[in-house]
Length: 250
Image 1: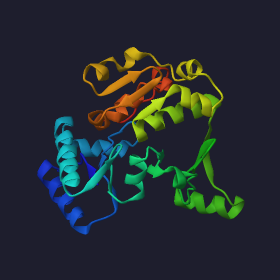
Image 2 (image 1 turned 120 degrees about the vertical axis):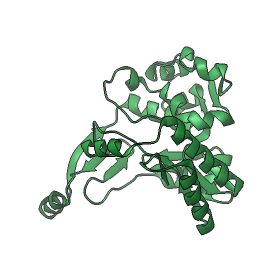
Image 3 (image 1 turned 60 degrees about the vertical axis):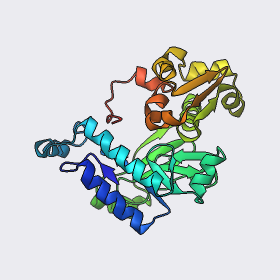
Image 4 (image 1 turned 180 degrees about the vertical axis):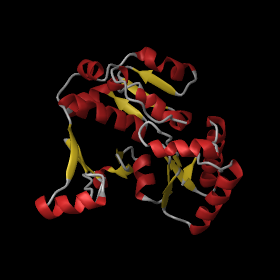
């Protein structure tokens, strides 16, 4: 379910959520529309139609969250919802929730993601590969070579550490530098250096009681999960060194 589209209102989104609840899916997600016209120029057309303001988008998220949780769904990390007996809800409860670039999953089922078709993305433990963008070129490449890669990103050892730190924050709301270090044969101090961690990056969240720091452990409080994406950004060193532009968190 996407919110933040032209013509949408809190009331219209609520109607769609109620219809979805009637269908009773085991899992669903409510995604904020990502407006990135610098990547997809065609999105500029939507600006002429009028996009909801961040305030209005927040109201849509809130009404969706309230309706779904009242209907018995468990909020899973960021954007996702599942029935209480679903594997995702159980993984959240047991602190074994995981995530790939498609969304939340259990550690047993996250594994690797294999992309088929034009523009699809494959996620392996050590990297990501995206296929060529057009269907015609994809077919030509498959017939000629059996594979149709367009671009790839190979993860460095530091990238793997950063990904694990951010995944623990976004999935289980708890991250311990000592435990992460043990996974990668590093000290807690080395992990902190890799993610460029500074307690002051979390100062606003600490003041609002959205997170807490106890020694080498960072914990996201229940209310903090509403903005867990923003909290996780404090552990991404690339945000300090890149000029790339991303979609807004709200």
